Image 1 (cartoon, rainbow, N blue to C red):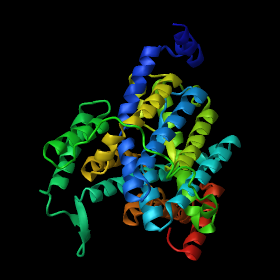
Image 2 (spheres, rainbow, N blue to C red):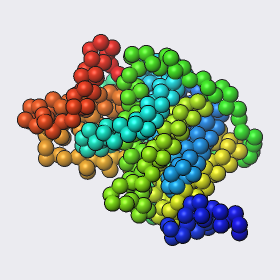
Image 3 (cartoon, rainbow, N blue to C red):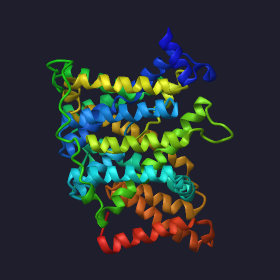
Image 4 (tube, rainbow, N blue to C red):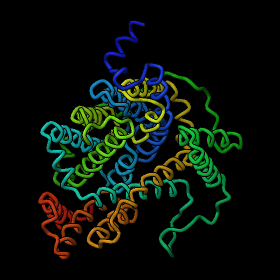
Length: 441
């Protein structure tokens, strides 16, 4: 009872109209909605990018726990953090596989982005930068990342295959076990989401795994619990000096840009839903962003891509979560999850289980399309090419760069040059120089 009283005072339960039981249930709900990252992230960074699978799994869980705990204790917000979807795909497919950058150097770029983000937070420059970026471009980047990771999900599941005639095409052999199981998982997840099931993506993956085991497509785990694997293969392996080379500016910028707006958008959205905004401002925003940047640096040191705030936190808020105790509960769940490695090792290696999650998250992110001003060509064209080039060029950074170059040009020819913030002109020049002197991104 005394411990409960201490928690109630620290997290200000009475002020927010909540209690310990409600906060713990809300935390469990949030964890279930985002637990899919424990399978998807090791699949992308481990199986695809060549990092140690077990180490990435532990790094994912521990980095999520650190970031979420800091968010709860420092900022007192019911917001959970974990390696960001989209950013992990960018890390794997664009940076490591596409550009041939060693994963150690890619981790160095993630760490540097976290340091820069922390400096921007402390100096309050983040607000100026956020305000300088046009709303249309922000939403175009989000939608583009959605298309990018959905395309990856379709490709990994072999629903979409290479074609000499059309570059890509629908697989003509969809009746194979892998594509069939993927389609089942996709339909199951969609139905669960339509019915409003909390943790639909996670339960969809579990349901797909069970059906896969029943039909012999997925192996049966030899055990459920075990000691967590060692994180040593990825611990402190980041190459910071390599990441600071001139050619990696676009990589670091992409990590910073996406993390900055992912976090800002999630913080405002969740705080709005929870009724925590005051006079249209977010209290303790600096603490929340500090927690995010420290989480990214911790994640890079442990061996995972950028850690960011998760919009799935709204599930916990909808269940009554209003304080940082919700986040503390999520952090505890992530730490406990490291003992379930045998399940993750079996399921995450099957693309049919992880691919539906990638496709569904892509659908959710694509909702940003509606926020673009399609009636204004000076807004629509840069935004369109931003999100279109991400999947076509197979690079989030390329999409961002093209958008940042075309936007000021479009505004100049539209006679609206004064509407463009000077920061955007500087970034456009930098990206043009990057293309001219260092080639594609």
